[in-house]
Length: 140
Image (cartoon, rainbow, N blue to C red; front, side, top):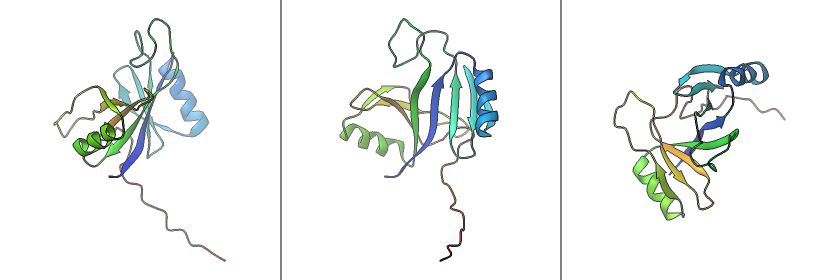
């Protein structure tokens, strides 16, 4: 099974301000709106800049949290990937599979240390599943 890192979610106090920073500092482009923020992309990886109205899922409750929330792996077969995750000591956290081919979604799991991550086989807006290698000539 091959999994590709294609998504990172970050909790921020102001998604618009964070998006401007990602544009100016890293040359990333806006890929669209997220339910509670914005998606940015470098053309391969999707970065979600999210402002949570309350507690951040998977983080200690009762106080604001800003920083990395979770990462996401784009897999070929969601059921097979879930089996591999559980066999390796991970566990289901939340979410469900969406069979609509026109939507982006993920199912959340936790690794044995409690780190949250997404599995999807439908991807994220602004991310690409496969990266085409550049045809670079090597000179000696």
